[in-house]
Length: 273
Image 1 (cartoon, rainbow, N blue to C red):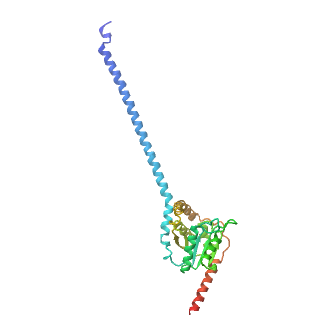
Image 2: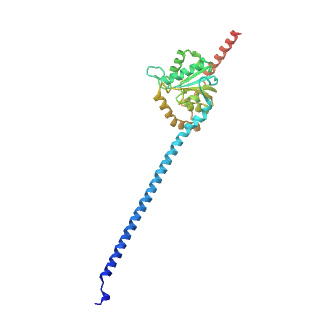
Image 3: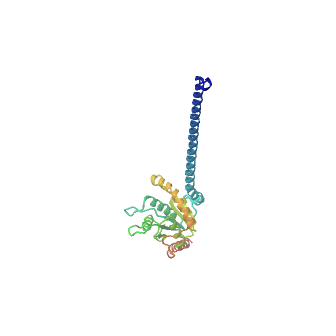
């Protein structure tokens, strides 16, 4: 065997070096590939998080839009009891009756506000609207009795026994009782939606609110929170304009009470002359 046919130590060392270099290069390339893959996955994950966050923010904003709409669209129609323009009718919306048959605190405060409007001459008739869907639960009579006890004449109080919701109360006030102008009386958290729905039902409605925060803090805070989803439902109601559960025939109670009030005013004027 000649020298040229034999591998020398130097040749073996060079081959080993090349092999080690090749393996080292492959390892570095694999490490780089893994780093690139990890980096790409991280970027995709961050993009997904940002997308989810953007969708969540958009959903929250969309949920609040109807609430903002009720506030903005009724801002010029909401007043204090001292500044509200005169309207022939006060529309008091029901808010529950206690187990002892008395109105809840929130409802009593609404009724007190309506009574004050009557005694101040800012309204002539009070239409109380509530739920009387079961035999032993009668919001409407409870409200009327409370007002009579407060000194409002019984013939100036008219009851709607099928006011099962704010929308139904507004529609029935317009379509059944013939109310064209009214002052809506409720709590401040409910007033924007109530005025908006009544105006959408065709009533020239303004509103006076009772601020119940100091008396019923938890209930009032809950009421404001509840108005966010309630405003979404109200927007759908305005668009779809569903019929009330009971519409029924026209009732003349409000018109008759207004006629009696006008007659009393005329008699008073004659006596003064």
